[in-house]
Image (tube, rainbow, N blue to C red; front, side, top):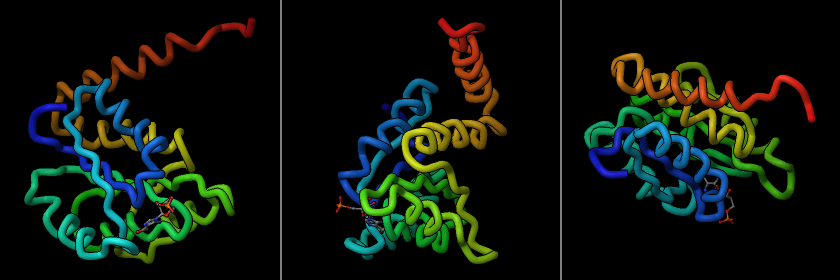
Length: 161
Ligand SMILES: Nc1c(C(=O)O)ncn1[C@@H]1O[C@H](COP(=O)(O)O)[C@@H](O)[C@H]1O
């Protein structure tokens, strides 16, 4: 999406992309400029430090961080930026994402990460939550979010077939 990105989507590995693509797809549908990068607290700590320290200066307003297993990425980023950080627990093979969920949710008081559900539902909702955050100060974004939700509601059938 063109224009200065307001939402950063970061993930610990290329293998997280099938999940985090759900975030990118919904942001695209909502017309919210975003940028996706692979950044790992474990494997690329210097890149993570530079990203987290510079995210606000880069113009990002919200960071969405997805990671699986020992998912320290969202919390480490939250420790280094005042921006809202939304954490998406990516489903892991060994523990089905429970490890990811607990790693992201159990932050110490003072360093918040808004933790979403495991997997694609969480990745989708992270985009909607980012839109709601941005929409609080941007009526055009809020209008598109309301329309997106209305369209989703309209798809719910009254009766099962
Ligand atoms: N949890 C983290 C972090 C981190 O938190 O910094 N970096 C990579 N990972 C995770 O390791 C999993 C397996 O990665 P590989 O598939 O590359 O082995 C991924 O879900 C990734 O998010």
